[in-house]
Length: 536
Image 1 (cartoon, helix red, strand yellow):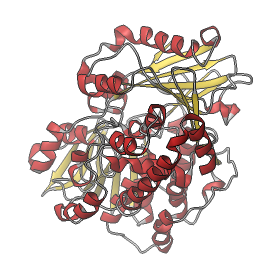
Image 2 (cartoon, rainbow, N blue to C red):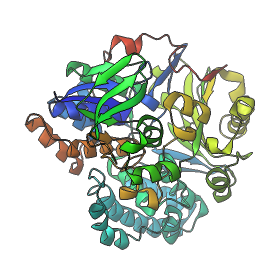
Image 3 (cartoon, rainbow, N blue to C red):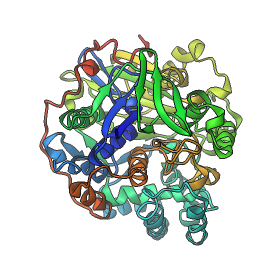
Image 4 (cartoon, rainbow, N blue to C red):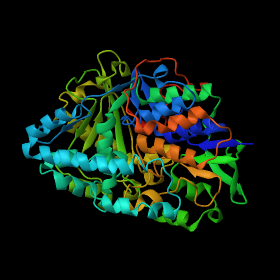
């Protein structure tokens, strides 16, 4: 009895598995890939290490909590360090904006670009804090599966004027077009269009200011390995290379999950897979409430992502750890991506250079990069197999002609992922990068519920559920699941760990290099890890 199965070993699934274990359950974590991490998998090629997905840690305490559930310390497993600047914005005219560090550091940069926006920024930060105090501190780890829970928050939402989008909020406070762009890009980090995403998501801005931006030495994959080691120590059964093909129910309760090799019994089931895929492919219609069927059919998806990974024999010392390379168009480009669903000739890019902080992620004297371009999801019918090489070349030429001279001459490793791979590898509907979009009508109660809409003992975590995408979002969704599932045995350590959200403390540093997960997760060759991507 008390057997819990968690489907999907992304951060939401890993966090849910650990929280279920701390509550006394016998936990099995299942994933279809050959390693832990989901979209946080790792590609290793000829000495270069490439994190496949998330690269920004903005709320380290959410990871600390997972170790503290078992009386352990994260610093004994992984070294998490602050990054400065948090982001470097590169504009088409050659100007830059270094965002991060102390408040005065940010104000100094703002004064350089537009002195009259200094007070406006302080007002924006103040409003972001007010949104954060409600949207994150009070609601991020609270369930919204009942209509009454949503109704009770209407006064708060009205007070915050959540009907405004992020762009409207930012424009109320800032006049500079450059600063407006810089402080409105946060929704893109969780799959949303700043011109369509509710201003509630501006809480990300204050979240960054409160806890800063961090990086796990060794890459996000090293953090996954640290969590894998913790799960192994605590007796969580990890079953990789296993794709779930269906959920068997009896009297509206999940009893088994089926896969190619057989079935796994469960008393409680947690899903960390795309909710639209879950309801459309794995759950029988008669086991779904009308609300789930409506969301599955009509929910608006996030944009897709094109990710180009490359290693260079030259070190680009002027490139920050996180660079936002902005193109000449902003709103029209986003309109093409999100609304018109066309792949434009231009782009804006997120450039990740982990070797700026951790040189070990590339051979000596080399740099490791990935560059992410928001693109339409597969509903655009873009034929990626026909254009992927051309698109990669356009990105390389754009970077080379602006901030990375000589780039094309020093690339020695190169491969990519398109929305097609997101669909095939991660079972993401339409290859969406972040499941459903973070619009007002797809937030809180209107989002896929953390408690299944139909099956009594099924719970959902991850980007498509409340509170949303991004590392803080998916880790908080696991806390929501935890609050909905009863404990099997009392656990005082578990009870105290959940209070960490109100604390602010630095992350200790003590790098561990022996963070191995199960043998099956590490047995694949470097070329097989991340199979299915296009390599050159």
